Image (tube, rainbow, N blue to C red; front, side, top):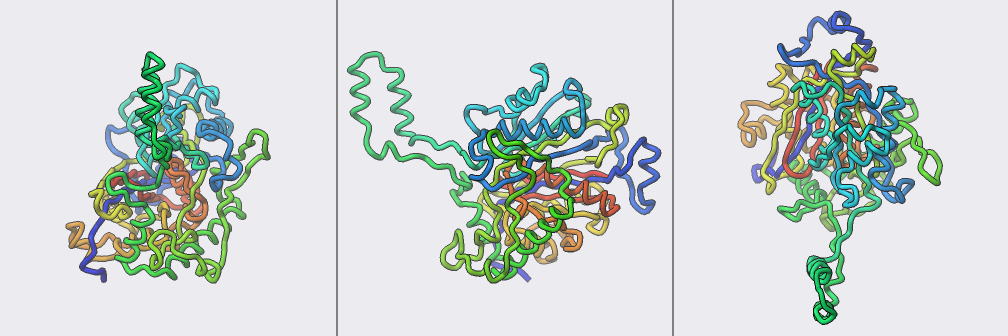
Length: 465
């Protein structure tokens, strides 16, 4: 049961369904490898859109090996990694879309700068999107829409984040004074303006991972959500330990196939994520609350960490992919965005989006073989699982007759997640997609479901058999 005093807060979630393509050579062999008990979700009159390949440079804790670079450097490395792995001719790519959250003002259209740096033609258009933690999901669905509309056959989508170096501004008073000073024509005017500067003008404006409309940090939202669903500190630490343990096993077992090495200028080549650190319940239990002090349950150990990284995926119409001799990794079938009130719970997007996308596809939770959810916080994951498995919540907050059901843990984030692999805000969506595709192939599954909470209250869903 859930507390009746529970109040829903805004949520954003990104959902994706993928169907494993396997050793796809043509339509006939694709249909032949599908289990007879499952439908294909092919839509009449709509192009089949496939993920040919996807890569990411290693996700690193901020302040480590990528600290001296710029976002377009990371994005360029991901694009070059994609080109190297696929050998796709640069001139074949019709369009490039990239996501980013914390923008570097010198390269506001980071997609264009990264594309030029990676050697794409200056005739290839590129634009940048931002949608909090689902920015690369938005980049991918933008590409899907362009292909479905017949505008393009080949689109590269991705995302990048560099938390090691974020823009820090002067106060607005100081900015206004400096801009006015720049327009002053006489020495007297300049001196007059300078004389008005006060010490508080020099206080910098620091960026924060907080909601603009509420000024609340994501961590506070997570702490309130965990409390509302009675998720204990012990449960959160246990889940975080699970994430790190599974990620370490996947890394050691060579399962993180989307990672490509990156030779950092002036430094060694980076080959793997550096945030995977299995600990112990005893060690994790020693940490103090990070946000709601002294009684909160969200700590540094059960939260995702500030991360640098970039990712990229190659999307094509199925017809184009087959004509070029590619064997697609997965099909992207559909997508849905849903949103919640920004003043309400920010992290319950998966709960709201799941039933909508399943109904649209004509599937149930039992049809899904692989679940990949973005782990912003352990408490957020566990609260969503409880909400998804609650008839009371479905009836009182979602206007539904019954619950959608919680994913079984044996199919859920089995190669780790953002708590352990890292979370470069705009790059995570592509990682979720490729992990799902690779996991489906390894497990012999057909359908995968991806979800990610993000700021702004705008969940998204994609389907693909």
